[in-house]
Image (cartoon, rainbow, N blue to C red; front, side, top):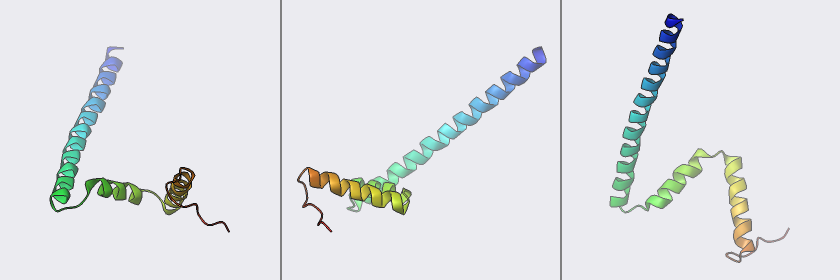
Length: 87
């Protein structure tokens, strides 16, 4: 039984250490991304818009079209834009 416990402990330790390494890499990448946004902002770009574009580019075309249609519908219902023309 002690051998099985030892194997389980070793596996657990290995999983934890792998997760910790990935967390460190994730933090380093997040810091790099933050620097890129800061550089873009220093050049005059609006970082909120850049973040939105990055988010939009992750979506597939159909999902994006559906979201845009819903956004237009909701804004129209709130009187924020003209209602779409009826067909």
